[in-house]
Image: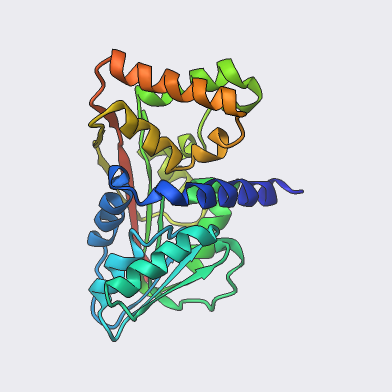
Length: 273
Protein backbone atom coordinates (compact mmCIF):
# COMPACT_ATOMS: atom_id res chain seq x y z
CA UNK A 1 0.00 0.00 0.00
CA UNK A 2 1.36 3.43 -0.95
CA UNK A 3 1.92 6.24 1.54
CA UNK A 4 -1.07 8.06 0.06
CA UNK A 5 -3.33 5.01 0.36
CA UNK A 6 -2.25 4.50 3.97
CA UNK A 7 -2.99 8.14 4.77
CA UNK A 8 -6.47 7.81 3.24
CA UNK A 9 -7.19 4.61 5.16
CA UNK A 10 -6.00 6.01 8.49
CA UNK A 11 -7.98 9.24 8.11
CA UNK A 12 -11.18 7.47 7.07
CA UNK A 13 -10.95 4.96 9.93
CA UNK A 14 -10.23 7.61 12.56
CA UNK A 15 -13.05 9.94 11.56
CA UNK A 16 -15.61 7.21 10.91
CA UNK A 17 -14.98 6.10 14.49
CA UNK A 18 -15.01 9.67 15.81
CA UNK A 19 -18.44 10.32 14.28
CA UNK A 20 -20.19 9.22 17.49
CA UNK A 21 -18.76 12.26 19.34
CA UNK A 22 -17.76 14.56 16.47
CA UNK A 23 -20.83 16.80 16.86
CA UNK A 24 -20.96 16.64 20.65
CA UNK A 25 -21.59 20.16 22.04
CA UNK A 26 -18.15 20.06 23.68
CA UNK A 27 -16.58 19.92 20.21
CA UNK A 28 -18.09 23.14 18.96
CA UNK A 29 -14.74 24.25 17.52
CA UNK A 30 -15.54 22.44 14.25
CA UNK A 31 -18.53 24.73 13.61
CA UNK A 32 -16.76 27.78 15.03
CA UNK A 33 -13.82 27.63 12.63
CA UNK A 34 -15.85 26.31 9.70
CA UNK A 35 -18.16 29.31 9.88
CA UNK A 36 -15.22 31.66 10.33
CA UNK A 37 -13.64 30.29 7.14
CA UNK A 38 -16.83 30.82 5.15
CA UNK A 39 -17.26 34.31 6.59
CA UNK A 40 -13.97 35.30 4.98
CA UNK A 41 -15.16 34.34 1.50
CA UNK A 42 -16.90 36.69 -0.90
CA UNK A 43 -19.86 34.38 -1.42
CA UNK A 44 -22.93 35.68 -3.25
CA UNK A 45 -26.33 34.15 -4.01
CA UNK A 46 -26.18 31.69 -6.89
CA UNK A 47 -22.51 30.76 -6.48
CA UNK A 48 -21.09 27.23 -6.59
CA UNK A 49 -18.87 26.00 -3.73
CA UNK A 50 -16.76 22.88 -3.31
CA UNK A 51 -15.94 21.91 0.29
CA UNK A 52 -13.42 19.07 0.64
CA UNK A 53 -12.79 17.26 3.93
CA UNK A 54 -16.25 18.57 4.79
CA UNK A 55 -16.90 16.44 7.87
CA UNK A 56 -20.43 16.99 9.14
CA UNK A 57 -20.81 20.26 7.27
CA UNK A 58 -19.14 22.84 9.51
CA UNK A 59 -18.21 24.94 6.48
CA UNK A 60 -20.49 23.47 3.80
CA UNK A 61 -23.72 24.28 5.62
CA UNK A 62 -22.96 27.97 6.26
CA UNK A 63 -21.76 28.20 2.66
CA UNK A 64 -25.12 26.80 1.51
CA UNK A 65 -26.87 29.45 3.59
CA UNK A 66 -24.78 32.16 1.95
CA UNK A 67 -25.26 31.09 -1.69
CA UNK A 68 -29.01 30.57 -1.28
CA UNK A 69 -31.46 28.37 -3.12
CA UNK A 70 -30.02 29.30 -6.52
CA UNK A 71 -26.52 28.32 -5.45
CA UNK A 72 -24.95 24.91 -4.96
CA UNK A 73 -22.52 23.42 -2.44
CA UNK A 74 -20.79 20.06 -2.85
CA UNK A 75 -19.23 18.57 0.28
CA UNK A 76 -16.69 15.74 -0.03
CA UNK A 77 -15.25 13.56 2.71
CA UNK A 78 -13.57 10.17 3.13
CA UNK A 79 -15.58 9.34 6.27
CA UNK A 80 -19.04 8.16 5.29
CA UNK A 81 -20.20 8.24 8.93
CA UNK A 82 -19.57 11.98 9.05
CA UNK A 83 -21.43 12.48 5.78
CA UNK A 84 -24.50 10.72 7.19
CA UNK A 85 -24.60 13.32 9.95
CA UNK A 86 -24.01 16.14 7.47
CA UNK A 87 -26.98 15.05 5.34
CA UNK A 88 -29.18 14.88 8.42
CA UNK A 89 -28.16 18.39 9.45
CA UNK A 90 -28.78 19.76 5.95
CA UNK A 91 -32.25 18.20 5.88
CA UNK A 92 -33.09 19.55 9.34
CA UNK A 93 -32.03 23.03 8.24
CA UNK A 94 -34.07 22.79 5.04
CA UNK A 95 -30.99 23.25 2.84
CA UNK A 96 -31.77 21.60 -0.47
CA UNK A 97 -28.86 23.26 -2.25
CA UNK A 98 -26.09 21.18 -0.63
CA UNK A 99 -24.97 17.69 -1.59
CA UNK A 100 -22.58 15.44 0.33
CA UNK A 101 -20.54 12.74 -1.43
CA UNK A 102 -18.01 10.19 -0.31
CA UNK A 103 -14.73 10.83 -2.10
CA UNK A 104 -11.08 11.80 -2.09
CA UNK A 105 -10.05 15.36 -2.98
CA UNK A 106 -7.28 14.05 -5.26
CA UNK A 107 -9.52 11.89 -7.45
CA UNK A 108 -12.78 13.79 -7.80
CA UNK A 109 -12.62 14.10 -11.58
CA UNK A 110 -14.53 17.36 -11.51
CA UNK A 111 -14.08 19.86 -14.36
CA UNK A 112 -11.63 22.76 -14.40
CA UNK A 113 -12.88 26.10 -13.07
CA UNK A 114 -16.18 24.60 -11.96
CA UNK A 115 -16.56 26.46 -8.65
CA UNK A 116 -16.64 30.03 -7.43
CA UNK A 117 -14.99 28.94 -4.19
CA UNK A 118 -13.13 25.83 -3.03
CA UNK A 119 -12.73 25.28 0.70
CA UNK A 120 -10.64 22.89 2.79
CA UNK A 121 -10.85 23.23 6.59
CA UNK A 122 -8.52 21.08 8.73
CA UNK A 123 -7.90 18.55 5.98
CA UNK A 124 -5.10 19.51 3.62
CA UNK A 125 -2.41 18.27 6.04
CA UNK A 126 -3.62 14.67 5.88
CA UNK A 127 -2.24 14.39 2.33
CA UNK A 128 1.47 13.44 2.22
CA UNK A 129 2.14 15.88 -0.65
CA UNK A 130 0.07 18.92 0.24
CA UNK A 131 1.23 20.98 -2.75
CA UNK A 132 -0.16 18.35 -5.14
CA UNK A 133 -3.50 18.48 -3.35
CA UNK A 134 -3.63 22.28 -3.41
CA UNK A 135 -2.86 22.33 -7.14
CA UNK A 136 -5.81 20.01 -7.69
CA UNK A 137 -8.11 22.26 -5.64
CA UNK A 138 -6.81 25.40 -7.40
CA UNK A 139 -7.57 23.79 -10.77
CA UNK A 140 -11.27 23.68 -9.87
CA UNK A 141 -11.48 27.38 -8.88
CA UNK A 142 -12.84 29.57 -11.65
CA UNK A 143 -10.91 32.72 -12.64
CA UNK A 144 -11.95 35.39 -10.17
CA UNK A 145 -12.91 32.75 -7.62
CA UNK A 146 -11.36 31.95 -4.25
CA UNK A 147 -9.52 29.14 -2.48
CA UNK A 148 -9.68 28.93 1.33
CA UNK A 149 -7.36 26.69 3.33
CA UNK A 150 -7.70 26.58 7.12
CA UNK A 151 -5.21 24.74 9.30
CA UNK A 152 -4.21 24.44 12.94
CA UNK A 153 -1.67 26.91 14.26
CA UNK A 154 1.15 26.37 16.77
CA UNK A 155 0.75 24.61 20.13
CA UNK A 156 -2.38 22.74 19.08
CA UNK A 157 -4.46 21.71 22.13
CA UNK A 158 -1.58 22.40 24.49
CA UNK A 159 -0.86 21.72 27.25
CA UNK A 160 -3.14 18.68 27.11
CA UNK A 161 -1.90 17.47 23.70
CA UNK A 162 1.60 16.72 24.99
CA UNK A 163 0.17 14.99 28.07
CA UNK A 164 -1.96 12.74 25.85
CA UNK A 165 0.99 11.65 23.74
CA UNK A 166 3.09 11.02 26.82
CA UNK A 167 0.47 8.58 28.08
CA UNK A 168 0.40 6.89 24.67
CA UNK A 169 4.19 6.58 24.65
CA UNK A 170 4.03 4.97 28.10
CA UNK A 171 1.21 2.53 27.28
CA UNK A 172 1.78 1.79 23.59
CA UNK A 173 5.10 3.15 22.27
CA UNK A 174 4.36 1.87 18.75
CA UNK A 175 1.38 4.25 18.55
CA UNK A 176 3.30 7.33 19.70
CA UNK A 177 3.67 10.14 17.16
CA UNK A 178 6.66 12.47 17.25
CA UNK A 179 4.60 15.13 15.43
CA UNK A 180 1.12 15.74 14.08
CA UNK A 181 0.54 16.11 10.32
CA UNK A 182 -0.56 19.73 10.70
CA UNK A 183 2.79 20.63 12.27
CA UNK A 184 4.16 20.91 8.72
CA UNK A 185 2.14 24.09 8.10
CA UNK A 186 1.42 25.38 11.61
CA UNK A 187 2.97 28.82 11.03
CA UNK A 188 2.44 31.42 8.27
CA UNK A 189 5.91 30.93 6.79
CA UNK A 190 5.58 27.19 6.23
CA UNK A 191 1.99 27.53 5.03
CA UNK A 192 2.95 30.24 2.55
CA UNK A 193 5.90 28.14 1.32
CA UNK A 194 3.63 25.16 0.71
CA UNK A 195 1.14 27.29 -1.21
CA UNK A 196 3.97 28.80 -3.26
CA UNK A 197 5.12 25.29 -4.17
CA UNK A 198 1.56 24.69 -5.40
CA UNK A 199 1.82 27.77 -7.60
CA UNK A 200 -0.17 30.17 -5.42
CA UNK A 201 1.88 33.29 -4.69
CA UNK A 202 -0.65 35.98 -3.81
CA UNK A 203 -2.40 34.78 -0.67
CA UNK A 204 -3.74 36.48 2.45
CA UNK A 205 -2.81 34.63 5.64
CA UNK A 206 -4.40 35.47 8.98
CA UNK A 207 -3.51 33.98 12.36
CA UNK A 208 -6.19 33.54 15.01
CA UNK A 209 -5.05 33.00 18.60
CA UNK A 210 -7.90 30.98 20.04
CA UNK A 211 -8.67 28.75 23.00
CA UNK A 212 -11.01 25.82 23.39
CA UNK A 213 -12.75 25.80 26.79
CA UNK A 214 -12.93 22.69 28.97
CA UNK A 215 -15.65 22.76 31.61
CA UNK A 216 -14.47 19.46 33.09
CA UNK A 217 -11.79 16.79 32.62
CA UNK A 218 -14.40 14.71 30.77
CA UNK A 219 -14.64 17.46 28.17
CA UNK A 220 -11.03 16.81 27.19
CA UNK A 221 -11.70 13.11 26.72
CA UNK A 222 -14.78 13.90 24.61
CA UNK A 223 -12.62 16.13 22.41
CA UNK A 224 -10.09 13.32 21.97
CA UNK A 225 -12.61 10.67 20.96
CA UNK A 226 -14.52 13.10 18.74
CA UNK A 227 -11.47 13.99 16.63
CA UNK A 228 -8.55 12.43 14.79
CA UNK A 229 -7.01 11.24 18.06
CA UNK A 230 -9.66 8.50 17.94
CA UNK A 231 -7.57 6.60 15.39
CA UNK A 232 -4.87 6.11 18.03
CA UNK A 233 -7.20 5.52 20.98
CA UNK A 234 -9.13 2.75 19.24
CA UNK A 235 -5.94 0.74 18.79
CA UNK A 236 -5.46 0.41 22.57
CA UNK A 237 -6.55 -2.74 24.38
CA UNK A 238 -9.22 -2.34 27.06
CA UNK A 239 -6.81 -2.08 30.00
CA UNK A 240 -4.54 0.44 28.25
CA UNK A 241 -7.59 2.43 27.14
CA UNK A 242 -8.74 2.78 30.76
CA UNK A 243 -5.29 3.80 31.97
CA UNK A 244 -4.82 6.37 29.19
CA UNK A 245 -8.25 7.86 29.84
CA UNK A 246 -7.69 8.10 33.58
CA UNK A 247 -4.23 9.61 33.15
CA UNK A 248 -5.68 12.31 30.88
CA UNK A 249 -8.55 13.07 33.25
CA UNK A 250 -6.10 13.31 36.13
CA UNK A 251 -3.82 15.67 34.20
CA UNK A 252 -6.65 18.10 33.47
CA UNK A 253 -7.98 18.00 37.02
CA UNK A 254 -4.68 18.15 38.89
CA UNK A 255 -3.40 21.06 36.78
CA UNK A 256 -6.65 23.00 36.90
CA UNK A 257 -6.82 23.28 33.12
CA UNK A 258 -9.95 25.08 31.93
CA UNK A 259 -8.95 25.58 28.28
CA UNK A 260 -6.49 24.36 25.67
CA UNK A 261 -4.95 26.31 22.81
CA UNK A 262 -6.82 26.10 19.52
CA UNK A 263 -4.84 28.47 17.34
CA UNK A 264 -5.88 28.60 13.69
CA UNK A 265 -4.38 29.95 10.47
CA UNK A 266 -6.61 31.03 7.56
CA UNK A 267 -5.25 31.29 4.01
CA UNK A 268 -7.34 32.91 1.29
CA UNK A 269 -6.27 33.24 -2.34
CA UNK A 270 -8.08 34.98 -5.22
CA UNK A 271 -7.57 33.34 -8.60
CA UNK A 272 -6.50 35.85 -11.27
CA UNK A 273 -9.02 36.57 -14.00
